[in-house]
Image 1: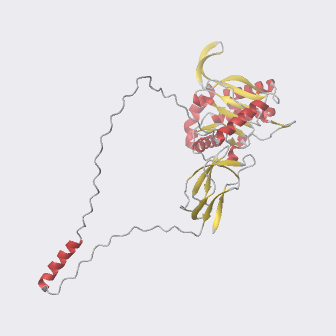
Image 2: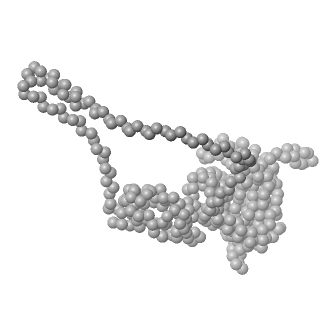
Image 3: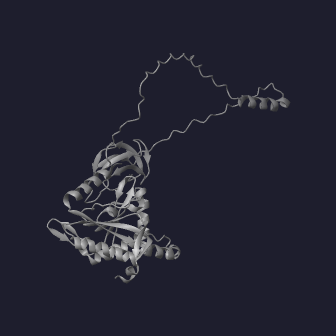
Length: 382
């Protein structure tokens, strides 16, 4: 029976993809659920698998072609079988019969001699001798002059993900009235707490206690206090969200992706660290799912892992706020009239000024700062 291999159903926000290289060729036998090709969407790369075991009799779409969800890609014959021709087995020559006139006392000796002759390998014909190599003509002397300095250029099309990133960032700049406010946070209390609890936390939960769980928890508390930062603009309406789905910007080889921590305010520190570690691993392996990249009410972007000291992050539409984290660096600060060295980090909040006033934005960022500088607030929900 011939069946069609179709592009998978995607999502409401993703209706098409670009077919990448085929992993199988026409005429190949494939097993059920074996990967046939890859489909690149705006957000992830999906694997096209064989619905049944059979032979790939026709490929309908060539690599680089844009296809819509449900479009036929290939034809699979489930009844065809590939007959693999077995290599011919060399049959040893059968020894000739012993003539009747040989005396019985000599028959055994003659038989052994015949068997030995049969096992001698026939000489292989010698390959034809290669024609004599002609002398190469003398090369012309290179003209004197400047040598090329490698100023080459190459052109390649943008991936769908890179095009989608460009579209969304430009959309944010065109539609939102973006503004960024800054503050700095003393990370000494968080670092001290991590140093005291790291060993026990790792033994108890099997994951290290990182910094991102502190920031996610602090952001959720601040969003609860300032719900407008967790809202979004929809036409002439303001959509308030009574849940906290926090997007975590993750860098991958294909570009920046933002998987979402659903109901982040209900997650423990260990749950957050597990999710973030899993997002990073699967983003590198291109194994994130579409539903993990959709939605989100607020985003956290950590440029500090790459050494960034200060930046102005761009909104992730339709969200109204994004928090930028930066490198922790020892700096002199004044505490109780004394100059001391502390591990300091700059925080940047970019927000949509159409919806969020400066007072709310500054107050939100101060709440995040105060919570991190006194981590007991995370337990007492102050």
